[in-house]
Every structure is written in structure tokens, then in C-alpha cells.
Length: 493
Image (cartoon, rainbow, N blue to C red; front, side, top):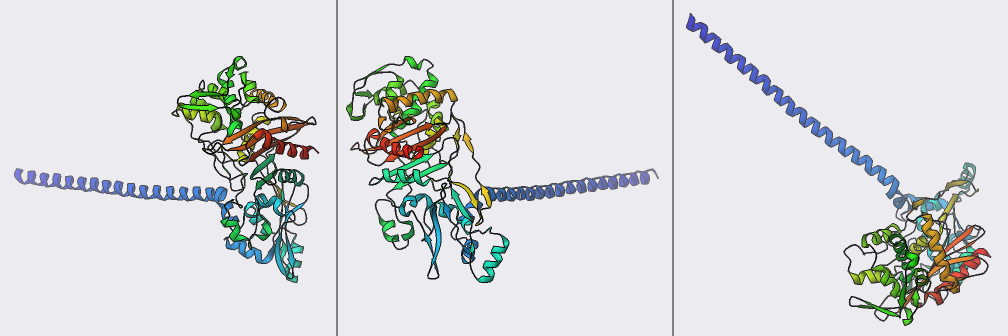
């Protein structure tokens, strides 16, 4: 009996052990299953959030490009029912319009070549504002009765009109002043970012693009290139504004700076000359900037903190793309703390590896003129329907504030001396106050130079900034400054 009882107890213990083991195994299986379900759930949540993120990104960033793409079938369909709207200047002049002759629609450009690159063309693809505002021009927000009337009569509904910031008077002055030269002019309001004028030379006839397509594409002069936003050039002595500013930041006693220039200097194995080999004698920082003394600025550069110098340039959008609703090139700026003494010397005077667009130089000058606040440049003020109703309005946007107001005030005084006593006297006027900087940027081993001028003119609270680049123009003071003067004069006339 005792043995039998013991055996039964052992069997009971074994069964209980098996039950407990089965329960433990079941719990473990459930845990594993739960973990797998959780992992799958997390994966789907992650994918869902990724999808939401992409949709947000697409709507905010990529949708504009898709909407304006000439291959967008929706736009192709709209072209069948909507007559492309007008592009209009800030002073109410028509820059582009659709006309009908013998039952055929044609795109007409009343100012011909004058606005070729900025307004663009509408044949063999699209460019300029014609491309970037393609959807707006083909969308009709005319009142419902007009739309019904057009549909019933078989006519196309008039598209919305694009009202630009461009001023025909300022554009003509820039266009005429650049005649016969290759280069670009950008004129803008530093306090808002409005572009008053944007000229690129050589140009083309926007209404004859299709018939001249072969010539336009095969020309060695890059006729379709908008040099104002896409052309990349060494900034030359206009970059000395950046070098001077960094020196002021690092040397609070900058007014005591003195340097004796004999026309050339040697840095490492590099021999640097002042423009034309001119010897400027003893100069302070203000005199060095006014006379655009290369040797003084090479000497100044050797006292600078490379990291801080590079960061200031990048704050002013060197090595970046200026945000504007046109095709624009990214500037090139490779200087950093590891750069050698030769690159430091070249960079300080706007040579070496640095390349920028005329638009960016306009933004740099505008930041100084606007007390250190950098505004985003823009070309379109409003989009209106055919009845004049406002569909959308561009809001002014601040990009950043890289400079202090006090720094800008000091720079303005120095740049004033450039146009009153220095290299930029041909940009000066007794009718309004001008300050600016000339530049002569070497671009090949033959020491040929592009001519630059960046400056601002002020009168009774009104301001205009102008950036001028003349390819192979030589002296910025002799060639680019007079062009800026004509643009200033047209603006205040």
C-alpha cells in the first residue's frame, strides 16, 4: 500500500510538472507571438509615418515642380480650354501675352529681347517665369459666368495674370547700359527682396525660339543661359567686403591698422600684385577698401581665424544657392580651416576657388544695405484673375540676419569712400547717396578680368541695390560702375 501510494504521488507530481511545463511553454509562445505582432505593428506604423512624411514633403517641396512641369498632362489639358494669361510688370506694362491670329494662338513678347531670360519663352519647352508660373498662367479663376459664357461660345477661358516686381524703366536702363557686352545686371529692393531688373547678355528673341532653336543650342555664347542666376564668376575685389568685415570682428582696434603697399607682395611661393601694379602707399582699412589694395588684404587675411572667416562667408550664402523662383546655380566656396596660405591669400581678394552668381552678390550688398537682414529675392508680387481679383500674393521673407546693424553702418561709411574717393567714383551721383565696391576678377592664366560693381543708392528713404558683372570687362571701376550709375539714375528719375 505504501509503495502504491508513493507511485501515485510520483505520477501526480509528474503530471503537475508536465502541466506546469505546458503552461510555461504556452506563455512563452504567446509572448513570442505578441512580440512578432508588435514588431509587425511597429513596422506598419513606421511605414505609415514615412508615407505621411513623404506626402508632406511632396506637397511642400516637389509638388510645385510637378505642377509646373511642361509634361504634366493636366497642364496639357488646360492648354486646350484656357488661354494662357499675361505676365505684367510692376508699372503695368505687358511683358508676355497670348494673341490670336488667323485662328492660331501665339505667345507675344512686346519688349522683345529686353526681358528674354527673366520672363522666358514658351516654345520648345519653357524657361524663366513662363516655366515657373506655368500652372498659374494656365489656371482660370475668372468668375463663373465668364467661364460658362466661354464654354457655351466655344472660346477659351482667359488664364490668370502674373504681376511681377520688374520695372520696365529700370530694366531698360540696365539693358541699354549692357548693350554690346556679355554679362548680367540685377537690381533689387534690399528691404523687401523685390527684383526690379534682371538682365542677361547676350540674349535672344523669346517669340522666335522654335525657329531659331538650332542656333540657340549650338551657339558658343550660351544664349539661353541666364547669367544673372546661373553664371558663376570669381567675385574678385567685391569679396574684400567680407574680408574687411571679418577683420573688424576679430580686431576691435581695426582703425589703427596700417599697411604700406608698394604694388606687390609675396606669400609663400605666391606673388600677388595690386590691379595694374599700382602702389597705394600707406593705407588704413578704409583706404585699403577704397583703393582695392590686394596686398593689404592679403596681409589682413593672415591675421584671421580661418574657421570664423569661412563661417562668415557661408552665412552670406557662399557655397549655397540663393532661393529664388528661377533656375539658379549654387555658388562655390571651398575655403576652410585646413586651407593653405596660398588659398587663404587668393580667397581674401576674391580669387582662387570661389565662384558666385551676380544675384548672390546683389544679396550680399542688400544684406549690408538692410542693416544685416538678408531678405529672400522674388520676382512675382501677385497672381490675379482676368477681372483683377487677387488669387495669391507673395509675402516678403527673411532668410537670416548674418550681420549686426552697427557692422553694416561702419561698412556703409567705408563703401561710401569707395565711390567718393576710390575706385568706384563713376557710380557716384550728387542726386542721391551711393556706396559700393568695385571688382576686377581674373579668370585665366592670361590674367584677363571680369568687371564687377555692387552698390546701393539711397534717397528719401528709397533704396536700390545693383549688382553688375561684365565678362572680360577688365576694370570694375571703369566698366561696371558706370552701368550701375545708369540704373540708379533710372530708378530715381
